[in-house]
Length: 291
Ligand code: PXG
Image 1 (cartoon, rainbow, N blue to C red):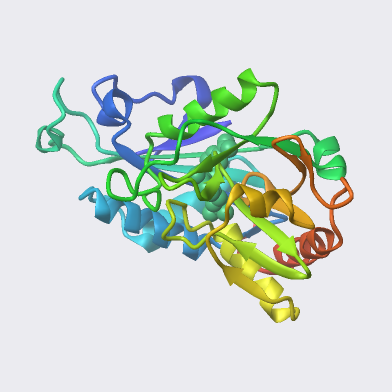
Image 2 (image 1 turned 120 degrees about the horizontal axis):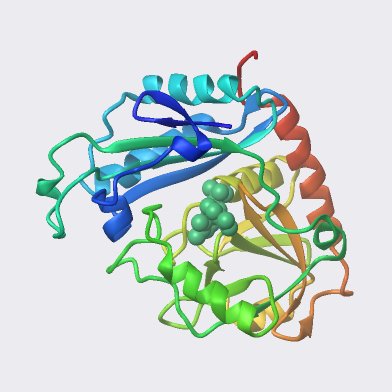
């Protein structure tokens, strides 16, 4: 497996970044996770846009144009002979000294492109549905580190994940500082109530997930009423269906929240319908490349 680092393709065990890179020292960098389905890179433009927006907010200059970054990504996929893959695009602040000051990172930011396979949860969970819990660690406040910035510092989410794992669960619901539902550690959350679809608004300390937006769009096109609305835990508990969305996880049903059974305890009808429609999208939509 070859990894792209700053214009070079290196073997996995040779693909290394300096320990003085501020990505390593401080998590000072941005990233994207992108999926490729049968030679089609799904929502590539949206992911590249979000990467540049995250970088802009952090005053991090990406040393390649969007077009060149797309070229480099396709080049890496081809070098690894991959038609189905998960792409991890990372841009770090680059090599500096032992201080926070990003001005000390005199060279360019580092660009790393990893292309590999990923299965976030075991297949059986997609059939059965997940059981998840709310954890004490709240999502970063937008006024502190805005969750819209997909930075390389994921400790907020990792702490929440650890809390869920400590309680015997695979995934955590993170609330905001007011106690409203924000999102999960690497996924957005949806509920269905009386055939309407609800998800927290993106301003509520959540990442504006690209899968989230795709699901909202698919639902609207298929005459399912959608609402971006604040949600309480109570609303999750009394929902008819619940599911999570993310590039890595895709759409995964949730059947129990904080010990409360959701609906009839099985993946819901609308969840399954949206999953089918989403899968169909991934088969036809995306930036095409040939091996
Ligand atoms: N919320 C957060 C906090 C995320 O990190 C999503 C929502 C879903 O966004 P997209 O655009 O992918 O629909 C993410 C993205 C992991 C992992 O290993 C998860 C993400 C990224 C990298 C790794 O769980 N999720």
